[in-house]
Length: 110
Length: 111
Image 1: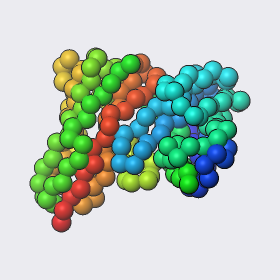
Image 2: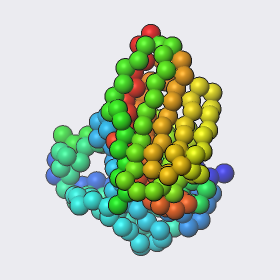
Image 3: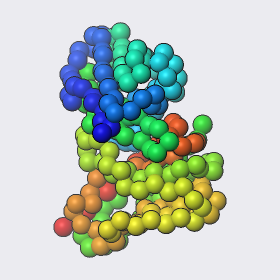
């Protein structure tokens, strides 16, 4: 079956520290992969999407970057976190039949 | 890029009352998706609409897409506390291609 794993579930990091969030997909190949961020009580903002290994499109200018080192692995990173990076981060994958979301990571930058 | 506007931003209804959430696009949609989210949790898929004029229902929730495929509504009949949460509409440009979302509607159901 097709599943998506996202970790950690919660994370508290100091300002200026690095970040690495990982998302892996099982049971499918060559999916489109996405990172979204949600500010408190708001909608989901698309940050990055990838259609293949090493192919990353950035949707908004920001302090974050994404990488896809393997077909089913998508990583969200930052070299130095800002307070404004706090939020709820969701990973997702898609193929023609629709979208599947991970359970999310709540990041608090202090 | 495609922008989705959701209204209202928040909604408080008495238990048993109906409610409607609207989602409007500046461009013709390919697929329109409705999700529900409890705070701090992942998304629960509700329905997907693709054809102009399409309407789908599941339990007490009905979603419609207009003929021009630029506006959708989500209607909940006889709301219950379990309907509380954030409702999100999303749309993509092609099948399984780059889903983007509206700003969300926070629903609170008062017992």
